[in-house]
Length: 554
Image (tube, rainbow, N blue to C red; front, side, top):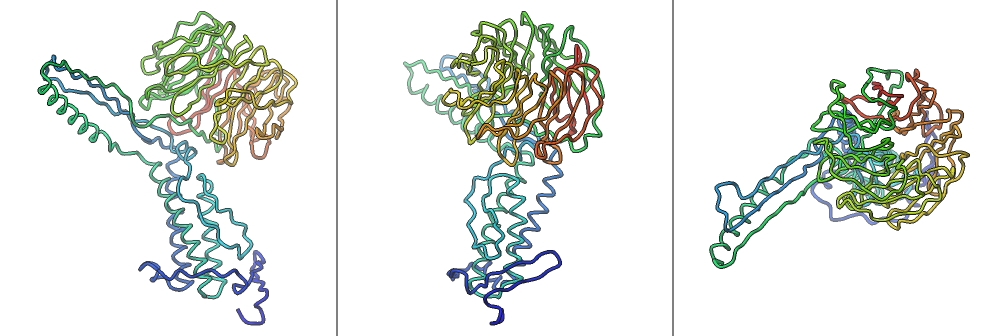
């Protein structure tokens, strides 16, 4: 900079005016004198700028490639089952143990949604250009943002500042931050592809060693009858909830109808078995039907309830997909979806069970259940026992939604007192009441906007409300939607959205960022009792319960 422009320099471009504080006025930064060989190859600001641009371009290429995999279903990990029974008195040529590795598949979009940065935090860089850059990196959105913002900031250093030690030191700090973004992008690239099974061979070697040690001990301890048994599941745990993207609402329409129930469909739940897409539908006829969505055929009918099946909740047990069903017979039944068989019945409620919500604590599956007996019960699904009972101010609990907020599990409940109650599931206490509806709560769902959890609720007052769970305020209210409204979240143009269906069959899509109607679809063939969106053959699909049938829209 020339001496007559040392106090202020205004750089004009066709797009913007940038006020630059002169470098001489910036707080001194000591230049790193211990440069690596790689650093010595970039000794000027221009060279450092070129290095930063190359890093950002490589990152962007990888991010573009990851984007093409969003609808792929990849192996996220494996569940290993080891079964061994060694007995000194039993000599056999059979192997000393059996082991199986079951791949756990998830949608790439779901893996990316669940990803969190766990590396070293980025270092603050002096705000010479008043860009107000946020150096926090927590999720995928931050990675995308920082790759662009760090490149733009570094280019300003290289292009607009004079080549001095302090300028180079600042740019090197930006490059150091970009290296952390590079590591994050590489991690995203890794989780968007099939994970390798690099544990099976190690487990086999360890079990062979255990068998050899057992044989040696048996031969030395001739008067002691030794036996050893091991049955354990280790490895990856958890199927991520799919992120469903409907970028073109105009393209979705009814494709087929699943018929078989003898009374109204109350709930539906999508899941996969060995990459086969399936749908469970609960009905007021007291049954749950299992459908193969590859050919829309009925696989099985789960029978056992003695009255209306009103609610469903998916969970995972020992690496296997399972289903919980709540009924007007006051019970909750647990089903293994790999065999379509009953594995347990939870007893404790004294009236209709209307609502279920599953969640995990430290990898252990739990279930919350709401009833007409003025209680919400929490169940440990591993041991299949009741953990606690929470009294509800609403006599009838119609709706439940479990979610995580600040790494703490929460539950939202709604019923016939017109309010929504938020529960801390660690303390098992009510922490907040959300007021605003003027009639019974029908449905509650959770969604994320900019990484922050919100909830949406529908009510028999004809509205859907969006809530800030931090202060309990209403963010927005969608009006005049009918008296009986089913809701389900999805994403539209990478932003949160909501599908609604009502008792007249009207179907609508709403933006949850702009808080406005995006699309009104053609009506379902009858009143909508339940909605679910999911990915079918790598494309968005929707299951709609209406009267005795389930409509599949794609």
